[in-house]
Length: 201
Image (cartoon, rainbow, N blue to C red; front, side):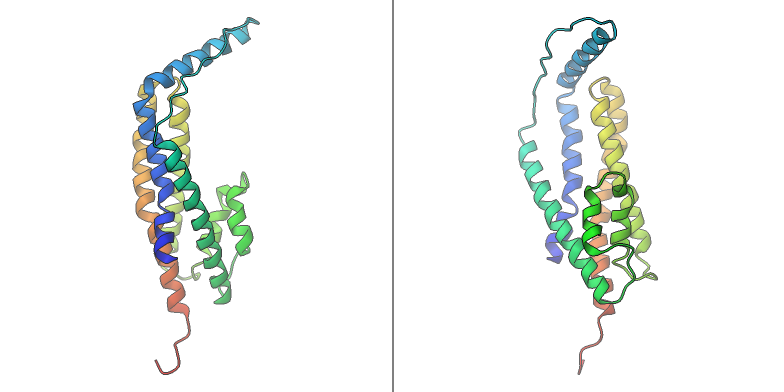
C-alpha cells in the first residue's frame, strides 16, 4: 500500500500538468469558444438573440485516460489517508477530525480548504519535525488548484494571460509532485517509529 499510495498522491499533479499542456495545444480553439461566449453575453446585455453556440469540442486524446487514472489515484489516496488516520488514532495521537470525516472533508465545499490538511497533519505526532512539510504540501496543492483553474478560465479570453498564469501553475505542479510522496513517507516513518519495540528485539 505504501508504494502505491506514494504514486497515487502524485498523479493529480500530472492531471493538472496535462490540463495546462492541453490549454497551450488547443489555445486557438479555446479563444474561438471564448469569442462566442462574449458575443452571447453582449447580446444578452442588449436584449438581443445571439446565434446558436457552436463550441469546438476539442479534447486531448489522452484526457479520458488521465481522468480515469486520476480517479483511481484519488480512491487509493483516500484509502491511504483513512488507514493512516486509523493507525494514528491507535497510536494515541491527538486528532482534530475522525478518520472518516477527514477523508469526507475533501468533497465538502469550503471546509475542504483546511480540514483535509488538518486530517493529514494529525497523522503525525504533534512534535514531529515533518509537520511543516505537510503545510508546504497543502500550500502547494492549494496554489495548484487556484492557478490551474484560473488559467483554464482565462484561456478562453487571452492566450498570453493564460500562459502567464500557466507557468507558475506548472511550477506548482512540479512542487506537488515533489512534496506529496514525501508526506506519505513521513507519515509511515512516524508510525513505524511510534510502534512499541518487539519482544526480544
